[in-house]
Image (tube, rainbow, N blue to C red; front, side, top):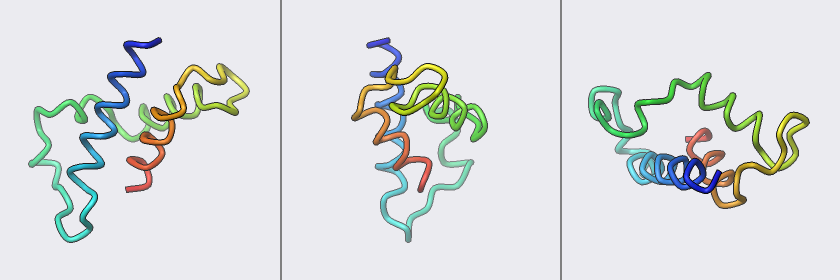
Length: 76
C-alpha cells in the first residue's frame, strides 16, 4: 500500500503542477508519455471511490495526503 500511495501521490502532484494555472491548461498531446496518462478518468475516479477514507468498500487505504492530492487533481 505504501508504494501504491507514493505512486498515486506523485502522479496527482505532477498533474496538479501542470494544471495549477488555469491560463496554462495542459492538452492531451502535452501529457503523452507522462505518468498521469496511465489513468482514464473512470479508472482514476474508481480508485478514489474504492479507497478514500469514508469508502464503504476499502476505507482508508489511501493516505490522507494522497487522497487530498487525488481529489484536487480530479477537481482540476
